[in-house]
Image 1 (cartoon, rainbow, N blue to C red):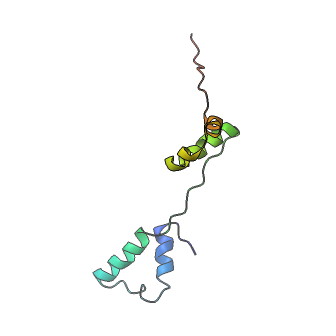
Image 2 (tube, rainbow, N blue to C red; image 1 turned 120 degrees about the vertical axis):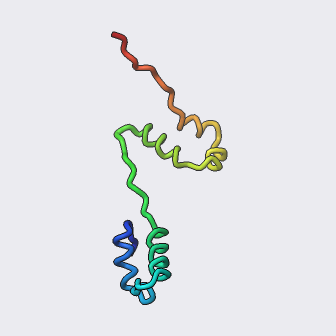
Length: 89
């Protein structure tokens, strides 16, 4: 079971031997450490209807080391040319 919030983590830990007792400050601190540093699931990303925007969104998540391994042709696929769409009134 993966806990995504402190309340769920507390409920989960209260079922495990050694975490049930929270009567002393040191035991409360132990419980708090385990709930604060719990596994946090990634938030779902927003997807658009534009494939290029989705590719750009994924590229932001890409580490620089991986970007350096791409060839120039592959890098060019991820680059998007900016266009001005400002209207004057």
